[in-house]
Length: 328
Image 1 (cartoon, rainbow, N blue to C red):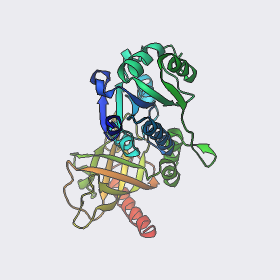
Image 2: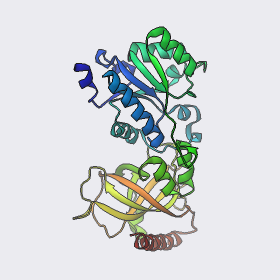
Image 3: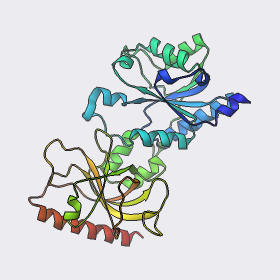
């Protein structure tokens, strides 16, 4: 009874040093889970089923930064989700616990044997592992599906291949979703994700330049090396807590720019999400917003003057309003 009750918990565990005796005994999976898309959701459904069969908690093991970000930095593929979004999405998909391991030089240098011993055995005492047959790990790259099966036979845990989901005769993957977003194909991205693509974040003070240009904006930090989107888009916006943004309105339409603002910023600027909400004049500082992307209007451009930029922003707003009128 006590073991079954544990499966109802939702808990984020940051680092091996925060594992406690009560965390021992679980069904686990390992991965990046960027986007927590429908392929990931199928894996998590498989994980939950195995956990229920054993009356054990389900655990997703993730890494921060993601390994390819550790090795490649800004050249790594753009994140679909920042860390907080990913953890919440994993919980929403039904995972009981998320173990986040800091991917640093110490973790990178672990052999496959040491990773299994420290994380899977000493840390979690796993009963069953759900992992892709193409999964590789360990500084010597010797850790693969066959290695894990042999380790399981030796140490008393079982290993199972993850479910693979195909849509349109292609495997659902984060790479495929990034390509869809880059192409402005938000319908395909939504099909693969199982929900519209959105970016969430807290509104931070900016330079109030948008107000000077006739279009006040809510500025949202992206919290990632690179953005999967760059350009000007129509968006629908709501507060992540479900509260009203304006009296009687839980969701507002607007136009957003994602990028580096080349007309007003110099080299080395950080990517930013700027949202202009139609017919809204309230204060959003400190509010956490979910910005849902609907349609790409144009690429980001550098203009010769602020006056030309002002005119283009006004045109973007007109085009966005027209799009929403046609897609009501």
